Length: 143
Image (cartoon, rainbow, N blue to C red; front, side):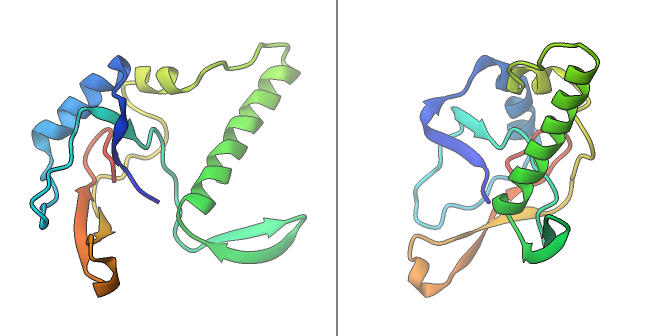
């Protein structure tokens, strides 16, 4: 799992308010290699979910414990699918593009994790150096 800022895609305008607030208040990770990451690219993730030691069940049978994106992504997709099914059963249309709609919900969706941080391997990954990454904060954050 990761979070941060794209080096290739520009940041869409609907993210500006949230990212700028984060950049004003957050402690940025150190740059041990003298290279500064840029903060003008597409910010990610748009959503995150519980993703540590997540039990995975298939057809009612426990399969494994998962972590990271492999656990959080199917969880979020399942929630959206259930919402879509409910809308369909009520004769309503599909939700449509979600990303911009999620950012319009000023108070977010669900529970805002405001403590903790990400970690990253150094560029010399073979040394096993683990460096602090982005910090969690109130509202949007890349952690």
